[in-house]
Length: 64
Image (cartoon, rainbow, N blue to C red):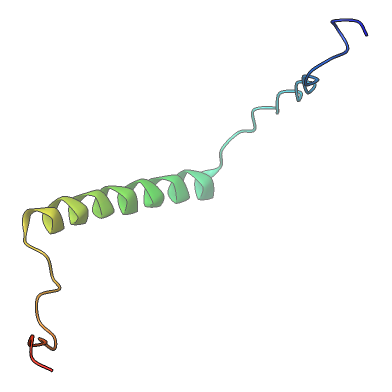
């Protein structure tokens, strides 16, 4: 049993993908996704400032 054969084998590196040029549709899509992400972050920040939304509902008494 040699020391080099034991253990996990390393996977081969995948070749790098070619950089493709972005057209107008790709640029617009990236911009739209960035705006949606920003709106989501703002909504999260606004929601975290307020208290929890679950407070109502049926309240159970201790009696049986």
